Image 1 (cartoon, each protein chain N blue to C red):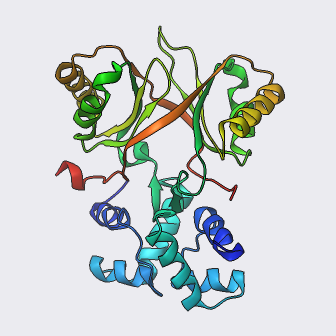
Image 2 (image 1 turned 120 degrees about the vertical axis):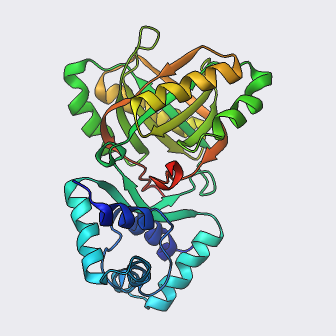
Length: 158
Length: 148
């Protein structure tokens, strides 16, 4: 279970990591905890799965990825695990989630695929489709970013 | 951008060192100095290539609930609807997409009740009721791009 210190640590970690020689020392100072203790906490969160990934988030579009597609696939339940793992191993796939379906929505596996052009993107998608032998999918390109901001746990709700 | 910049973009996404001198460890991997790594990363951030360096939390493990919402919005109303949606703090990503469901956003909240409340609020304020609520069941990969 998370205690008050964990909450405080997590609140501080949601801020962008300072690009200085000892970034965790700064955070530890703000938290009034020992740097060692903070690092132990962070590595513990990763081990426990509370932190899924600690690292940089990139701007795909600025990096030249003009074609950013949400591709949704209709995958039989029993194949989800295998196909999800395979998707995760493909470099062009940045995200892969299984999601709930509804009476008006049958697609259960969601991937984000990035490429320099739609032509390249659709080539990658065709290759994946052949590899997993699933033809029922939809390509949903992003047109405009209205918002992309990290979640601020607790701070926003208080 | 040079080869080391590209390696920095890859390493900082998937192998960011969680130790006292992370940038020193990165520098050793690339065979350059800590100062050079700091300089390069600051530049990559200034140019906007790196949005931020931070953890991605599993919202469920923190006691929160999250979902992906898709809405069918008349083209001429898309900006207005997007603005209404953006006002909610729990909305972290919001994109116009080329599809019949043309507005897609992720929503994180402290409870399912609050989530429902927000969705109903959005329906009321926008007059749009063609909304899909698609919570995730399993995560296989989260925001990693290694083709640079």
